Amino acid sequence: MRMNRMVFIPAQARNPHKGKEAGMPHTGALTSDSRPARRLGRREFLTSAGLAGAALALVRSSALGKDGAVPPSERIIMGGIGLRGRGMGDLGWMLPEKDVQFVAICDAQRSARENCKKFVDQRYGNNDCKTYPEVNEFLAERTDIDGILMATGDRWHALMSILAMRAGKDVYTEKPSAMTIAEGRAVVETARRTGRVYQTGTQRLSEGNHVFCIEMARTGRLGKVHTAYAHIAPWDDAYMKHDWLPAEPEPPKDEVDWDAWLGPCPWRPFNSAYIRGGWRGHYDFHTSCIGEWGAHTFAQAQAGLDMLHTSPVEYEYINNSTGDGMVTHFANGVRLILSRGDKYWHGSCGERFDGEKGWVAAADGYSKPDVSSPALLADFRKVVGDYMERTQRPMNHMRNFLDCIKSRRPTVADPEVMHRSMTTVHCANICMWLRRNLKYDPAKEEFINDDEANRLRSRAMRAPYVI
Image (cartoon, rainbow, N blue to C red; front, side, top):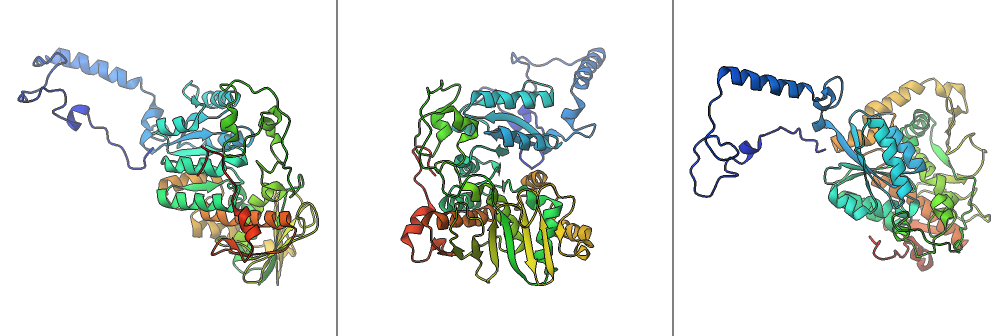
């Protein structure tokens, strides 16, 4: 879909000389064998018109935009890459949107391609969803596609987003959306150069309870906020495994394209556990327990602190295996503290803000936010409503992405938001790996006088899967 409304112009009107021999004068309408067309009598004309009307009646009203359907010229044509567990959940979230038409899936695993196709075809009641095993062919061939829904493993998120944007596609990608600081910056620059819309899947930025907490902190209703807390995942460690699983017989390429599955990561022997999610906890493929939830919660915390376009400048090493309790400091002195478990919330992916006048917190599964005083909840509807009016954003992350495809406005979780919150993830990880405090310059995007830390801002990428 392209957002300018399309007007059908008959081929002869688009090029009135097409099909005529060079140098021959235009003598009027021609039949297919180039003889002058005879006039139709009244009875023949009425018979012909009746047949044409009957044929037109057979066209589904939804194809014409009737019965509440969105006309073809206004539909957003979507394709998918790497849609399995979480990605299929995202797809189920997207398909009910009336202006979306999902047409194709690309995946290195045949079973995943077939599963997605079956799901889409059942939804639409046809057999039209196309499947592709190779991403370059997919992106080059499907020039009709406006946007990509992408939910590969972490190792592919940044590079696949860049490839899609270079191919002229808008991108909704799952998180963590960059494996390194350098990858995050490359996503930002690619989106800027190509003018593409990008949304990272930090969906709590579009949920009422979290938006309420963020806005309570951001607008000063808590007084001066001195501390924010962000949830990190309760499984795995910050110290990831640097070995690999034992080799198993590699399946046929049509079943699993193992080289493409690995993508930019170092070559590792095939093991079926990897393609079942066993890549988590391995340095080659993951961003640790800090990145697993911090990709969400650092963005939530930084939004409330009005720090979405920067990152903390100091990271204090904590002597444990997870980063639980690490204190980071922004340039204005406000602290962001990493927390594992239920010390500050109940539920997953929580954030909390402590200010002079009280605190607020939210996590998954809440019917309403936790607050230090019930009075803080009195303006819940107003706070969320004011946010929606100010930003013109819905409380629906996927819908925000789709709206921005049409309006070309920035999404709530645009490339810079992703990059700065993921930079906080990467700096915290590097602090843990080096087992010492770090100082970081968000403007220069480098650690201060620290060559050892700066070498960890990027990773080698295996050719040909390079940015």
